[in-house]
Image (cartoon, rainbow, N blue to C red; front, side, top):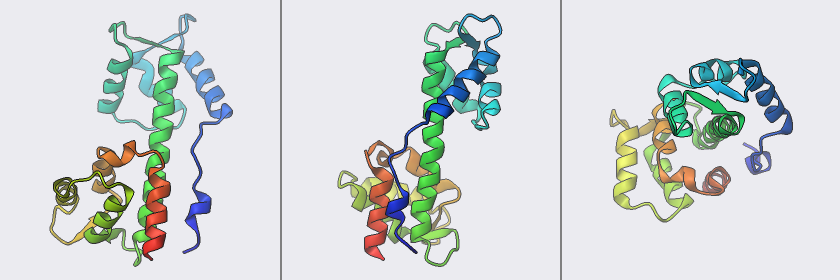
Length: 178
């Protein structure tokens, strides 16, 4: 399978990405006052080839637009842009980590492997938390989890995503196991 660890690096948003985002932001700044309407956010993200669902977009806009003015400044948008880029990278890396565990290329991994990885990443998961995550992902009781769908949602809301080198740790753990 090769050494995936060398492929994993600390993710950083490039200057080009920021410049492109800023230029796109400015295109949607219709009044030239350094602000974009929160109603335009979906279009701004789409122009940057970033997909975001309506619910997430509304939540983020509400979070940034504390005064409920209906506008975001570049600095506020930049926070959301960087968050979305990192989320997309997190998802890509998570899929890669699970690919390492998917010995048969079936798109699933045994729940035991998921449990082992979760324990290996950090010892702050209680058995109850592990059981809950596994129950939420193995909804059909098959003993496997589908990492193309539900697993990402569950993992994203878990403590794993607050770990500093979360994916590097996951990859390293998977390689030591196999």
